[in-house]
Length: 82
Image 1 (cartoon, helix red, strand yellow):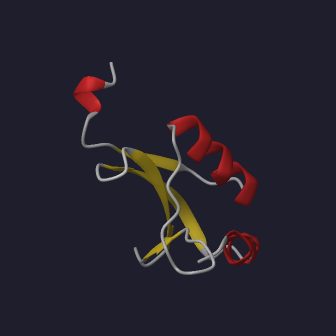
Image 2 (tube, one colour):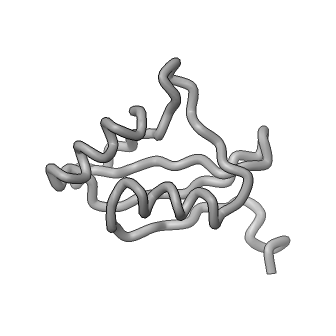
Image 3 (tube, one colour):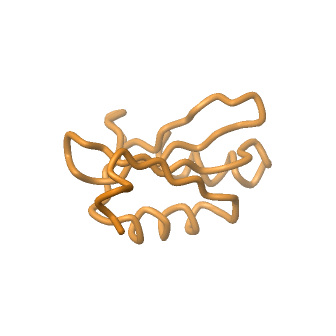
């Protein structure tokens, strides 16, 4: 889903949370929005390719642009981020 679609679904209260996932291939962060049924909706560009952000802060800022919702952080490298 592109950013505008995510904003629309957030306005319709379709999403319950955002998951920030550490992408080990690009060493960046991707964003998946979740609905009440647990379905994931990744944030993508207009070609359907998942967006990747350089830092956790940058990904959190994008979530806040979409709307206010709880943010869950999934990182495979939590031990290295201390």
